[in-house]
Length: 114
Image (cartoon, rainbow, N blue to C red; front, side, top):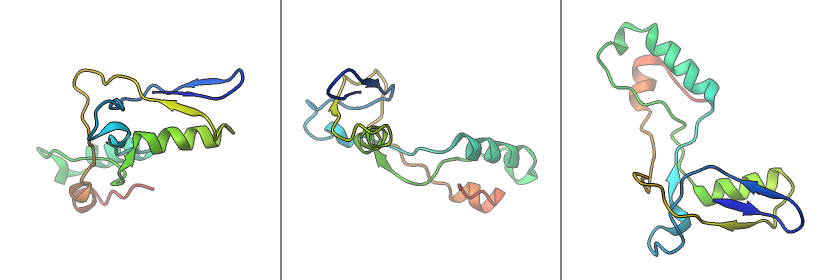
């Protein structure tokens, strides 16, 4: 996806997205974004917990955001709210929707993203 502002500023956002030509998903592909500090904390909690042994535990924010929402927020933060967002072709293997169920992380580790 490329967000291009009018003038001499161009911002390339290296994120997967579905193309606008994909009439069902288009800009609505979603991801569950999490802060790296939350991920690191979750990994440490899992490494120190006997309850995590042999378990597969999802770490994430539990929030679902479209790629388009993210691009718009980045444009706003950098002061280019009127940036034109251009959807690129999907990469092989991209998923259309990603939302993490963090209930097991919460139950086993006491993990709550901040």
